[in-house]
Image (cartoon, rainbow, N blue to C red; front, side, top):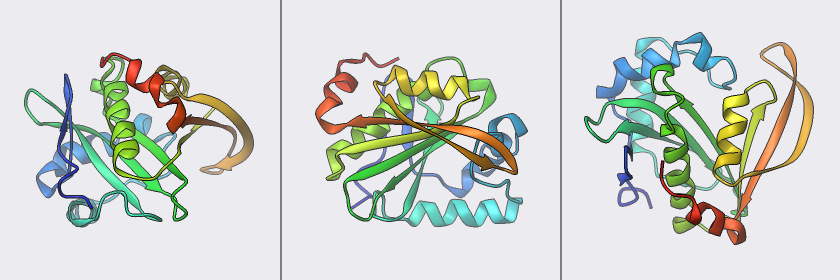
Length: 187
């Protein structure tokens, strides 16, 4: 499964495979300390990023137990503005979603549009019943985005992230609640 799942085109964005040609744009937002602040990934050298982009380009999408990285590009010029990580649990009951967006693209509803499309992809092409999102309580834009796509907070836990105490909020959207996702007009 995988090659026929992408690209997915919506009103203003395209979800597509990442590629080596995305290196400059990928590094631009992934090396931005504000974008990386609440992310679990580490900043990579250009060589590491090139290898990463080549590897995720070949990965099977939505393979249980593994993360899939999908590029978010502007529909008008196919320029990379962010990426979405999806991990389908090995037991196939749940998937986790994470997202990163270049600062210049934030606050315009593009991440919301991309996350909605990624969630539709998961529900349409897997046996996943719930999609989970986890974010730092201080990451208000991420919380707002998850709520805007119909996810509901179901838990919070105190933890240490990047050597700093924090509280993580856990959000969920269930397949049987997907109707809320379908009712949301694309941004």
